[in-house]
Image 1 (cartoon, rainbow, N blue to C red):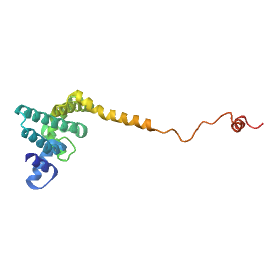
Image 2 (cartoon, rainbow, N blue to C red):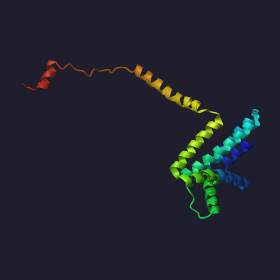
Image 3 (cartoon, one colour):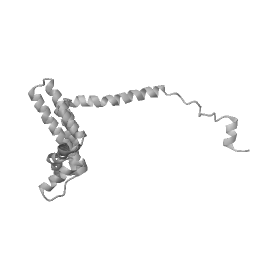
Image 4 (cartoon, rainbow, N blue to C red):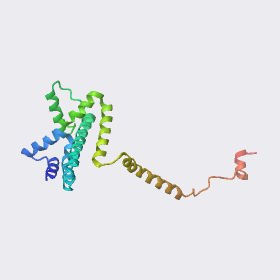
Amino acid sequence: ALGILLLFLAVIQGQNFWQVLHNLMFGLFGWCGYLMGPLSIYIAIMIATDKTVTSVKATLIESGALLLLLCGITQVLSGGMPAAASFWKNATILYDQGVSLSGGGLLSAPIGLTLLGLFGKTPATITIILLIFVFVMLLTGTTLLQFFHKAYQPVKKVGEVYTQKVAQRQPPKFNIDIPVDDPLVMGVLEGPE
């Protein structure tokens, strides 16, 4: 029920207190507020399928970390580093950027702004992308070998289709080769006598 509520809270702006909650979710998470509902539903399914408490806790931690990474990369790529002089002004800027979906929200600060301040934009982006990759693998239970195997399948299919198309290719319908020793051609090549 919480997942469905969060899903509707993200999709419907509403009014009064509903709008306050809507803005709070986006102010904290930016566009990742849209992921809160599906993520909660996924965790509820994990609990309902009688997973061990340890695996549910691990899933919660991994999901939260992935959410923070997504908020962070959004801030690094779109919002950048706020230029205000005080912490509270920066927090307000991050919150407002999250509400307007132009940044990663207030919770982009722990990862996004930290790496942006330490490394700069490009290295921070690379670092966060690698971390997102790792947390997606942890969350889905995919190993590196399984990932490469699944990534190779479309490449293999394209190769098979290409090989079939080349084998089915028909030769040209006209023959571009003309006999050079033909008297008519020889007369053109040699010129008038």
